[in-house]
Structure formats: C-alpha cells, structure tokens
Length: 444
Image (cartoon, rainbow, N blue to C red; front, top):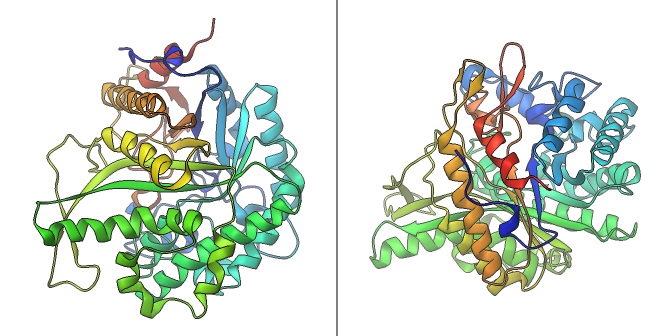
C-alpha cells in the first residue's frame, strides 16, 4: 500500500520529519534524571492506565543511535526532539546534571552525523518535581526558572540546532492539566488553570528574551489546534463552539500575535486571572521566527446550560475514528493552516510539528500492517499540500510519532508510532506505514 503522495508534491526544500518527546521515549530512570510531576501523577491511583510511567519508556537513552538510524533510514530530513528539564536540572534549578547534558550533546551530534536537522523543544511536559511542589505553572516564578533552564540548554546545544521551540502545546500544559485534570499535575481548579494559562505564556516570553539576548534567531513555539464544530446551527450551540474555540485555539495565538485574550474565554477566566496580568501582554507578544502547529482531530460541541462555565458538552461525531476515539478530519488541518496565515501570522514560516494517529496495531509474522495509518498520513499530507497551494508559508511536516511510546494518561496502551516497539523486549519493527513513507520520500 502506497501513500499516493510524496516529496515531489511539495516545494523544493520542504522538510519531512518525525517527532518524539523526552519523557515518552528516553527512560527517566536512567542517566541521573530527577523526578518530574508525571512520575508522581502516574503513581497516584486512577490517573494513568496501569499506573505506568516513563521510567523505562523506550529506553531511547541507551538506544538513541538505533532510533536515529530509523529516522535517517526513512529518508526523513529532520528530527524533532525535546530535552527533559528534570534530566539536565534534577531540582529544576541549581547545579546541572553533566550526564544529562552530555546525552543531549551526543544526540544532536548523532543527528548531524546522519544528515538530520535537529528541531529542539525545551519543554514537553516534564516539570521537575521540585518546581511542581513550589506551584509549577501556577507560580509566576516559573518564568524565571524556565528562562534559566533555556539559557543552560542553549549554551550546550544552541550552536547546532535548526530551530528551538520554547513550549509544546501550552493548552495541554495549562488547561488539560489544571482545569480538566487529565494530565499532570492533575488539578481541576479554575483559578489554577487561569494562572497556568497566563504563566505558560509568560515563561515562553521570558525564554524568548533570554535566548534573543544570546543572539538566537531560530525561536518559536508549538501550539495545538482542534477544529471546534457546533452540534447544530442553533445560536446556543454556535456560541458553545465559539467558547471552545476561544479556549483551545485562540487564547494562545491571539496573545502571541495581538497581545490580547479572546473575550469568550475571559468571560469565565477573568475573575481568576493572576493580579496584574495585563502588564505582561506586550512581553508575550514578542516576535517569533516560526510557528509550530500540532493537529489531530475535531470536536463537536453543544451548549450545556446546566453546567458551570464554559458550559460545554462533547457530541460524538459521525466520522471514522482512531483508537483514541478521535475523528479523522484532515480538512481541519488545511483550515487551521490557512486561518493562521490569514488572521494571525501572515508570511511567518509555519511547520506542522505533529500530526499522527493511534491504531490497534498488531505484530504478526514479524511485521505490522497498518493501512489505517497509511490512509491517515496520505490524507493529512494532501491537506498540507493544499495549504501550500493556498499560499501558506509552510516549511515542513513532522509525523507523530517515530516510536510507539508512553502515551501519557493512556500509558503504553496507545500506539502512534511509525515503528512498533515491543513492550517486553523493546525491539523495534518498522510498520508498513514507515515503509510507505520511506518510499514516498526517497531521493534519487
């Protein structure tokens, strides 16, 4: 089974890559890493399927050369990775862990040796436990902690990475984790959520300032977007979808590009915002060098007038779904890319930094046949191509994920990877989707 779309369908210089994150693949019990809030979240009953954590993960800490060979072997141009804050600063601040910094040094050199462009993310959800105990993202001091961490990593890796993203998916960092409680630290508190929604952007701004002072001109942030559709054409359901869109999609991009928060979101969050937040907005609006876009699915919303703000209820959609229960809606990717270019960033370079699907893959006869993922990838690459044709300054596409990894609250029960990882032996087996993508990207 082929993708039916490939490198030849995109402009010269368009980059194709795979993405991962540190806590999900490395094995946080190795190499002197300190504990992070995901370790304690997973150790608390009911938070994670099987109470599984990232202590072993895919053991990328020891098997990174094999994994980079898989990236290069697929004719991919780039590799998006993250640094584990708790690996390089076990207490979140103070003395660095030399073994942790040395690991990332080797990793970046390994990418370059294989002709891969390193795309660095500074924070992909591994808040050191010592800082989480001091309030983490609800504490305004997080901006300074993050800036110091960013400087440390930049001093070691900044001369060799292609781009640096400050934070991955601030909606997940703040709302999913502090309001919905589905991710670490697992809070369900509107005041904590409002503080985190602002402080995550303040930390981004502090990181940008710190690295700009070092002369870095490769700086961006990675935002996630989900198409928000109304369950009906009634005014109430349209307003519900608009509230969801404001919280999920508009809060972060409008702060970054306009220095404002959307009124539909402030209608509920304003009483709970940190004191003096308005004075931070000019800092948060600092120019970016690029924007990362993560996109997976859409949600359908109806008004729920009996529920507390934001008064939303999810409605199951009619489209085919992945094993995450997420509708497959590639049109939403084209829609967000064109919407962002039109309404927010103009000609600023954009990368699709994550797009992928989980299916119930099975290893049979030494191989994994995953036609659903092949079809998903083909449809979303076509959606990406359509955005390029519409004039979006789109520079690359990264598939999530290279490996079957630790999928947060789902433990190891969900598989997004192009490469199957055996949970017992950790043996890697490239799936049919890996081979289809390799054929689509092969260079003469």
